Length: 105
Image (tube, rainbow, N blue to C red; front, top):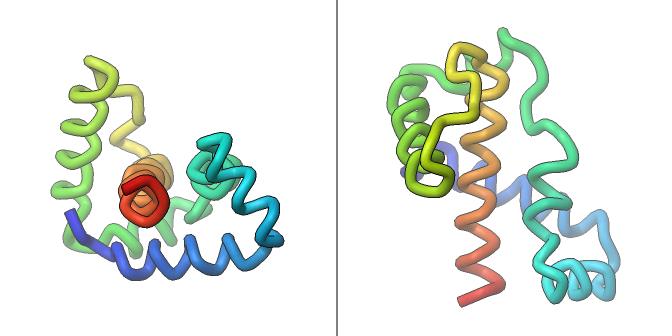
């Protein structure tokens, strides 16, 4: 899924700029870059902002998250009735893909 992937990519770039090169290299080496950027803070805070961000793709994103979690965990953990949690989980997944593509391929 590519919904707002470029926006998330820009967020990743901006976050990386907040660290010095040595720290980024260590986070990559320790396989912690994804966690540091996409799991220590929320991308979107607030239900209204989350609903606006999801727009007409809300159900597509929910399906995407369900598939990801079923494939990786065997069950769905994200509260799919909470727009804020849906956005942040989606960004987490896309962030994982972006980091994998850039640093681990």
